[in-house]
Image 1 (cartoon, helix red, strand yellow):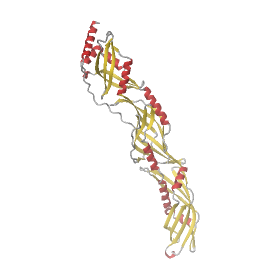
Image 2 (cartoon, rainbow, N blue to C red):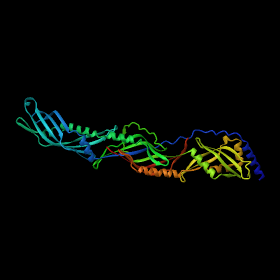
Image 3 (cartoon, rainbow, N blue to C red):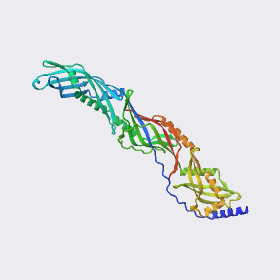
Image 4 (cartoon, helix red, strand yellow):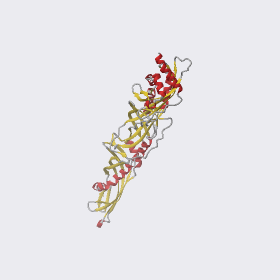
Length: 465
């Protein structure tokens, strides 16, 4: 005991006599935060045939053909035809077999004149008909809907008398079907192209930038930063036209009281070469700041003060300082010998230690491992503390550098799951099913300990025209 007592007493005298602070350790810049993974969120625009009927019925011009001085073959001579076709009833639309099918009744007024020696011959007639068209749809990178329309036009007999010769509009049309129908198909192509697809996709793009609050305690927001727009070619079947749109976006959860600033960028050209998947993944960061970690450690040390080598250690300061390969723990404490009832030999010191943070995925805790004295900043204080407690001091302190995150992570997952399952929005309605929350990627940054979880699931975004 005499041999042990003398170095302890000498160390306490050294600590009591130290009036200067040890030089802080050399630190390198902390690791950078991991990059945010690219995620895909998919919207599905489904337009039933009955809605297309209403849209086309409203947009299609009533005058669907106006042919002027059109050359036609009258059989006995070349004639010129003036014909106006006016829609006489509602359009009907169906969607199946990859095509949009359109039927439309109309009436015609035709005037036929002949040329040359028979120029005195002319006639007029009224008729009725039915357009039976089919349109193949595609989308260009500028999100414009295009149609390639073809079909047939069926006309009732509309008799025309050219002097002594009687003919009819139907026969003329059938003999000149290709030339006479093209203006009608072009008109339908224009009307289908007027469907407000571009404006709807623009709403989807803009709405994606609006942060969604996914947790209340702490307040957290799902933030999307779209980078690319993916649009599939229209799928026409089952009485509807379906278009899938995907956003390739950086997605993460930001923990803060107010919505993050996330202004939308201009709508980019779409990639139309692939059909997007509705699988999604986004990063969920759980950040424990160094100040919060230090408070937790000090609270633990105050609740269970370490007793090392017959000394009760009382910690008054503790700071965690990041570095590239490890972290520095700066602490100030006082050592009070158990055999000193009057506190005559109570002494205080500041010392620096280094350790490497690690994440325990099973216990969901952050802990500082491999804690050791920082030899580079060693001085008389270090020598005194080492003489007093040796490695027992390090072990005692390390046991308090354990920070549980299980409650915070579980609560965040539950809140995100509940919020994503509830549809959000009006014109753009977003909902999602969170399926898994993977083991976190762990690091430390200039701001604190960072555990980044990856949330994965299926998204559902519906759009309305």
